[in-house]
Length: 483
Image 1 (cartoon, rainbow, N blue to C red):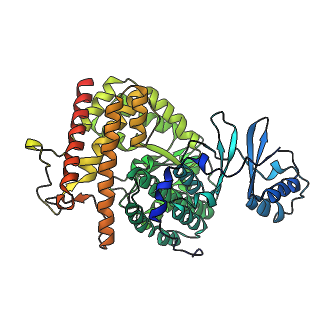
Image 2 (image 1 turned 180 degrees about the vertical axis):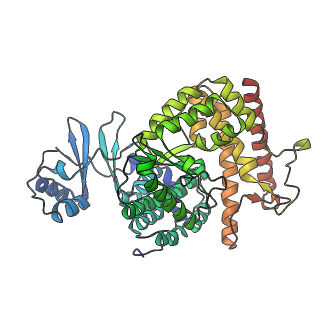
Image 3 (image 1 turned 90 degrees about the horizontal axis):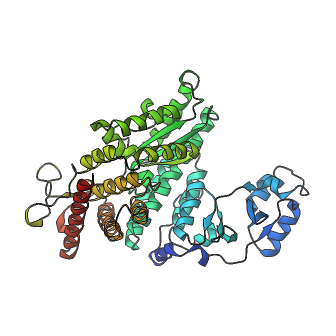
C-alpha cells in the first residue's frame, strides 16, 4: 500500500477558501527563464528564489515548466549533462489557469492530472505567477489532492479499491464543513477521474501501449462533474479511425474490462443499462460515433432519446481529448436550432415532472420498499439536468456541467437571466439536500441512496422544495410552448 494510505479528512475552517481567486494565492512575481538557458543555470535560479519550479518563457509566451522533480528524474537520474538547454527536460505547454479561476479549479486540475504546479495567466494571457500543491493545501480540498497522490502511487486495482473507501467520509466532511453541492460534486468527481486514469495506466502496464489513439470518455453525472458517493458508472471508448476490430479489438476489449471491473470494485457499480466501454457497442472508432449521433439527432426515436440523456453529457477523462472535441463540435452544429430534435427532447423530458400534486402538495412514492419517500435524484434533480441539456443543445453551447450550462444559456440569450439564476439556485438546493441525506446515512452506517423522507426536512426546507418544483414546472411549460 502507499505511504499514509488514509489521507486526512477535510477541515471545516478552510472550505470557504475554495472560492478564493488564484490571483490571491500567487505569492511572488513570475519566475521565468528563456528555453535555451542551461539546466544548471535554471536550477541556480530556482535555488536563489527558493522556488520548486521555473517557467520557460519566450517572446512573452509560456512554452514549458520545469520542477524539482524534473531535475531529479530527467537530469540526475538520467545522467543528463547540466549544460544542456533546460527546454530538453521541461514539460511543454503545461496546464494553465486564468488568475480569475478559483482554488477549486486549481484543486481539480491538480487532482485530475496528478500535477503539483499550475502557471497562472492574466487577462492578456501573460504569465502572472505560479500556484503549487502546497499553496492549494492551505485550502479545503487538500485531502482530495493528497488522496489523488496516493491513487497515482497505487500499484494494483485492490489498492485502488481500498483508497476509494475514503470518498464517502470525504463527502461527509465536506457536507459538515458547509460545502456547496457544486464544489462537492467537482471534488468527488475528481477522485473518480483519478481512479479511472490510474486503472487505465495499470491496464496499459499489463497490456502494453495502446495500438491506436483513444479517448476514455465519461458520461452522465461523472461527465457533468456532479457525482456523489452514490454513483454507478457510465463511460465509453472513442477510438481513432485507424482502429481495426480484427487487429485491435482484443486489446481494447481487455482494457475496457479491466477498467470497468476496477471501477466496480471501487464502488462505482456497473451501469444497469450496460452503457460502459466493456460493451462493444460503446467502444467504437470515430466514424461509428459520428454515425451514432447523426442517427440520434436526425431520427429521434424513443431509444435515441433515452441514449441522448446519457451520451449528450460527455467529457474526456484520459487519452486523446481531441477525438471528443471534434465530435462535440459536429454534434452541436446538428442540434443548434434543430426544432424537430429539440421538440422530441422536450417531450421526453416532460415525462419526468416534479412531484407536485393537488394544491401544491409534494407527492411521495406510494408503494414498495421506498414508500412514503421522495426520490431526490429522479424527481428533483434530473428534470433540471434535462432542462439545462436542452438549452445547451439548442444554443450549441459546449458546457457539460448543469449549473455551467444554465449560466452559458443565460449569456447566450436562450434563457432569461432570472430563470437561469433561479434554476441554478433550485439545483443547488435540491443537490445539497441529496448529499446531506447521504451524509446522514453514511454516519449511521447505512448505504447512501436518493430516497428522502419529508420528516428529515424543516418546514422552511419543505417550503423551498415546493418553490423549486414549481419553478421547474414553469420552465418545462416554457419549453413545451417553445418547441
